[in-house]
Image (tube, rainbow, N blue to C red; front, side, top):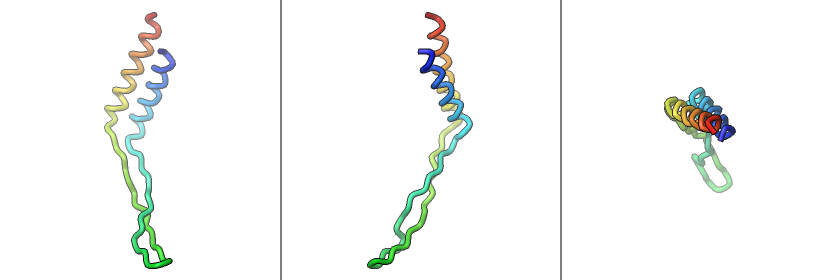
Length: 69
């Protein structure tokens, strides 16, 4: 229980610090026979820092329950 709580606290801290993940996909813009022109299209995945705080709180509860036993 304590190990799970510690992992959740670390994940929550990372979610609080890094609130955006960016990644790129390739899209075909023009395709004529053997000729292909591609472009990188950016995508952003964002979340609120409050999600990280909530995950850290759950991890703290897990750690506390582990010491309680």
